[in-house]
Image (cartoon, rainbow, N blue to C red; front, side, top):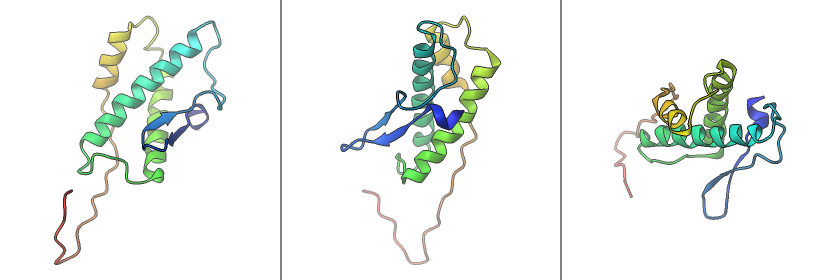
Length: 122
């Protein structure tokens, strides 16, 4: 379900965008409820992606595979949030606060520099 609801890609200028229209989502179909879940997912994703990137030295995704892995991990957390029903009756600012408060244990791999290699930060 998670991977079916979210699409991610890079535009020509490197900005990450989300394609919700081309994928099937199993969200409730009552009125604007599906759109609200999409907006909530987008907020959750952007907040958590920012938290992930803020602890990386480069501050950006290194590859499409890394982006896919982070998206899939966040989708698992998102499914758990939806299944819990905790969003029902929450206002926008409560949701945003909750999305910021969620601590995700992101996997990090730091590749050590080879001996004699002088790292360059540009």
